[in-house]
Image (tube, rainbow, N blue to C red):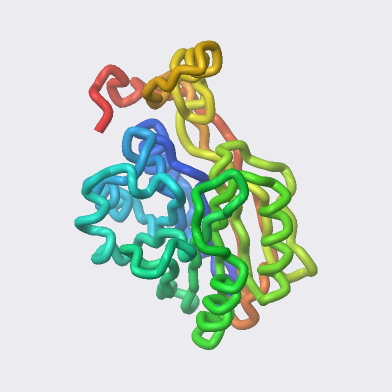
Length: 277
């Protein structure tokens, strides 16, 4: 592994959208440098909405250690049959008590334990429990086990993300990644020399569409105001939006953050005419 003995090298992929996003992340991990811990938001991974068990298992073979999600995680029926046994997947912790799945997990890495919490915002989003006290309790619990705590905050409003990010930094979080809008922000920073932060990590998928979805479908919805089924965009360019973070395993403090944003031409595009799975 690269880096010092105490430095955990982490990469976080923004929302993976459909087959183009899955293949882009797969190809990136096949050719990239080693990471100690790989996280990806996967709530849009299966045809743009939800996560099938098949795709969950595929992600594990890519080398993704932790999968986070958001409001779309329930869109595929089979999620209810496997989420309780999916030890690499977490769903937002502030869903009501009794919801299937786990809202946080602690993972082993070559450099030490890493705690990850998934949280859902409430502004312009589904009605869920307030995240403030729930997150505070979970951060405190995890920090009794490891100083390294990472949060994926899946939320719409920028102000809510910034405010909640600052709140999490005050509680000793190591890294805070915003997700959901699929548009990567250019505000990556290490707050107070301790917590790596970005308002939104962006998305991985077809760059030709509208946040990963087909342009024609998106346009029709805006022009007619009539609901129309979204289809995942398929084109000749895919993009990777991700964030690299280095965290000191002993202190839990972030020491480096780097935003990844690049597009590439697809080679044969994995038979783009093939039916999306």
